[in-house]
Length: 234
View 1 (cartoon, one colour):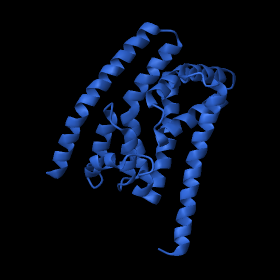
View 2 (cartoon, one colour):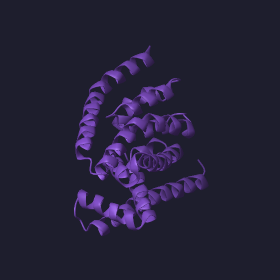
View 3 (spheres, rainbow, N blue to C red):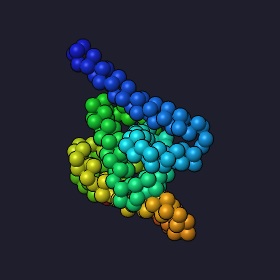
View 4 (cartoon, one colour):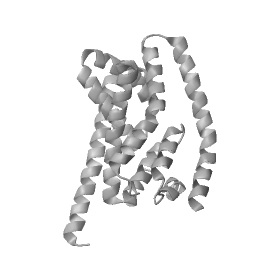
């Protein structure tokens, strides 16, 4: 590799890290300011109040946090989806969650395609990557991705890196995974919408159903993974 290309790669890497840092720092700083370190409930209440008075500011804040959650995976996804339902309703919440997920996934995808597994190692445990190594050269990868993103409890952040290291197109990946995420996101935003309207009984029932589906998904995931690997090996 020429010296100029090495310098260009280093500059691109620095730019990528800087971009992610800015997204995370802005999200954390804004949360710290509006919440004054008051906990998750206070964060939720403050974002709701900001969205009432300043819709665009609240939306930008939500998208920043949703994007950061996909890239770094520190913030759990489900509470954000519930919050989106409270702020924007079932389908509005679903739309904005999907927008944030697409932005975060695209950033990861392009960065990993540019810098390879060395970049992935900085953000996730690469031992998890090897669990899904059988997917990368699989002609049926699109179907496998859809199934895995459909199952609750699968490490979807890891799967984004796995897909980025494969030959699948970004557009194909986003279409497949966006459709596969619909049941999970809509269920959470529906719960959030009901919670925002004060329908506590219905909200609790939805959360119980979500928890049961999640437990089923966690139980079935290893069995499905085993079958997918066996099919690939055969």
